[in-house]
Image 1 (spheres, rainbow, N blue to C red):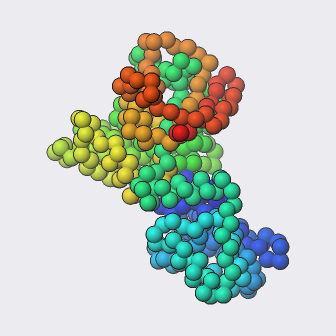
Image 2 (cartoon, rainbow, N blue to C red):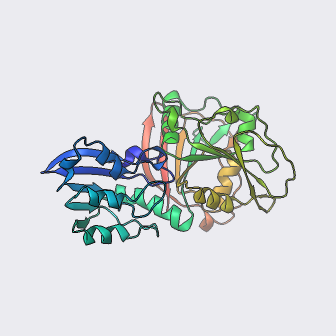
Image 3 (cartoon, helix red, strand yellow):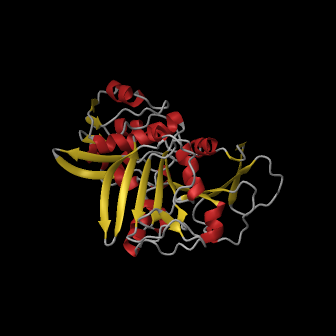
Length: 348
């Protein structure tokens, strides 16, 4: 249930809930788009006769909320409908909750059991905890290249290096992330839409953050034509231009070594409520994020094609002159997609 909410629940974490009565599952719920309603309330709302809930057990992948946000506290509804037992996988490390619901439920006479549901749930929750406590979202770098790591010819031609099935998996990856970061170079050269083009999943297209230091992009690019998601533009605080595109939110960022400070950008994205970021930018953006140790995972699609040294590399110069300074990742999954290969790496 929790995984159904991945990529759509922000600013809230993806949470799953199951209601059990007399050993039988009577309802299921998960955090709904934009975080409303929460998983527990979604599960409760599936039950027509609320009197059936009395004495039931509630299983949650995360401690129910105890504070007023966009919705009233879930814990109050749980008490109101007289659940007899609540089983949660983890206490919520959000300072606004952090064991408060557990105490409140126990004070109301409801038995609370904290039991780890497994590694997958823990990883899901820790992504949210890391973003809200440390302002560090999970950042996934997606690369589509030739076997020798080239993403385009020297004339910037890149359609299509990988096969159609690989591209479909790439779109699925977009649907599982809340936003994307992209640079002006990619927008100028490819004029992409960066949406999810899988049947039934177009509403899961991620919000977009564009790095446009000098505010050079105009409304003619396709990326600005989608009114169903949020578009943000980061630009230098030194820019005095007043070019503004309707429906776009502009954010000033300080420069560092003549480029936008990527660490400040990531922190800002986190404070806006995003915990999962997908990067499909060019070689320079990928290198900047890797240089600053901000990439947590790489999804690298490689076609069975060779381009040679005159092609454009997936990652530009990292200025590494010592073998000990290499960026270290662990290979966690491989998948053959016809003649393509998907390799998933996680930071060590």
